[in-house]
Image 1 (cartoon, rainbow, N blue to C red):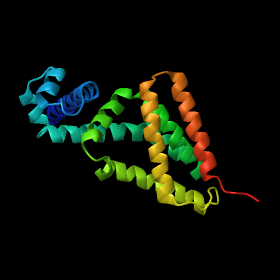
Image 2 (image 1 turned 90 degrees about the vertical axis):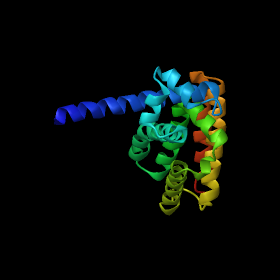
Image 3 (image 1 turned 180 degrees about the vertical axis):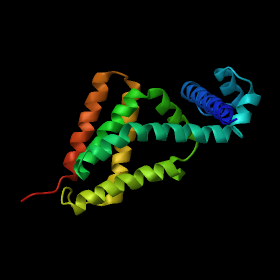
Image 4 (image 1 turned 135 degrees about the horizontal axis):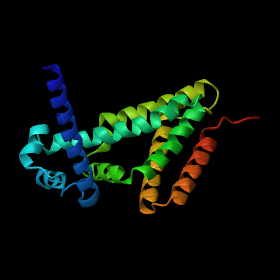
Length: 199
């Protein structure tokens, strides 16, 4: 009996992932207002009843899209940031890696942008966690003497705003050269902006 339950669980997980992927497609292509459960189910090749079996409603599915994109970003960026070795290196890995993530997953970021055009990003736990993590890196860098005595909340918000601008640029011009220029520019900018004054 255990193998059968395991198989059912795998099918359930695969179906949910299929529906999330279809929702990402519809959100990225058609926008938030047009991303109805009927349209998403059609994009997934299933009935609306199958969708509502796996997700309570549209809001439940949209929440899973947001969680999925943030989880993907964490899986892509987390190891780079953790393994960088110092607060400065970790911060710059986060900034540069974020731009690389935008370039690698434009469809996911377009879907997330569509959601946040209709829902406040600042109220999500994912966004708060990201900002808390950036703030923790900045504080650690100040305490270690790697960063100047800066206002953590202001700098964290500035980094987020610059990354938002980078997302617009990278997704508008989807070329590796543009992504590399944007990445390098932001890394240089925040390396200079946080560097401890000498002399």
